[in-house]
Length: 439
Ligand code: UD1
Image (cartoon, rainbow, N blue to C red; front, side):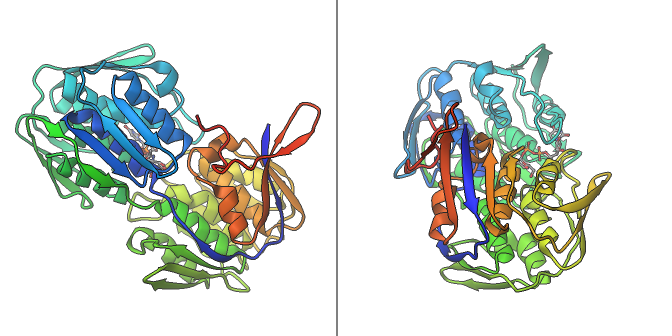
């Protein structure tokens, strides 16, 4: 078993570098399925376990993937004859691999993708993905455990999404690039990662416009080709370090962080009394002596991101009074609060809201991550807690945070990652990647 061990109470100081966004890299890797000519050369690819799984999905489809984890570059050649089956053992490891369905059926006319199961934070249906693909003329046959998609007549369509789902927007957008005629998708997701996907699709020769607004228009083309692209910065990783600086009375420069992408978080932090300065070098965050309480509601972009919800609850629990967190995107995303309770957090859950009582004097405890962002929230609480905190289930953290231990250490935190054997003996993990489970 591996654990992160933190000795609180730390005050973060220094600067931190941010990786390319996992949530941009994953659909971009799926988009390479569409390229029947030339290589795709990618830069700023974060070496995370989710990215490695997506690379394996591509390899299973007969795509050549060369990943240099040190330079964070990836070269992808999808010009061979592709396999049409995305295997279950990979898809079930990562729900996001469902975004291969649209590009695969668009390129080959047929695809068979294992059905992603539910996940910890909610049931996560894919009805919107399938509804949109059907409107493009794709026949969908759902069998036990997998989805079969057949496109005899892939054509443009006018599609309205009932909810601006990120994954559905990506799947439909990718399939529509090779459809005959024009597609208009309304009420689409507007996340920066959608814009990044549209940008690379256009470099591949697609004709996509409107990404970043609520309507995307696509003019179908016959084929897509290779290109070069650098993945957009991870606003959630940047936001995680902003919150850590804010709650620890820290003074941290988040290098090259993009203000536009983090506006919903920044406006809330300012409301809480955090000093935020946008400079040419990035976003400079100075945490106050006392944080003010504030109510937050998660929403699709440009609302407050659900992926910052768990980390933000730590800031709310630290603040001087009562705050509410209303989670409107996923139905079951408060599991980290039960773990924070072991560290002294006081709260109650009312439907999809958590009422958080501050100020909390966090105390160190043994806690377990319940999902990716919960892992980050527990580490942040450990950074400011009195005494020793041990966080386990690090496989969640490795899905989305590269070199988290080294980055916090560089900011002055007393933190290490250890492996514990059955007899309880601890070995320090000093691997440069921190992520010892990375393939
Ligand atoms: C993506 C992100 C995830 C983030 C989420 C919301 C990736 C790899 N993951 O996930 O980190 O938390 O956006 O910002 O980019 N829904 C349906 N039917 C569908 C699709 C979605 O009901 O067909 C519901 C989901 O159950 C959920 C909500 O819509 O309640 C949002 O899901 P969606 O935007 O699709 O999130 P993901 O693309 O899965």
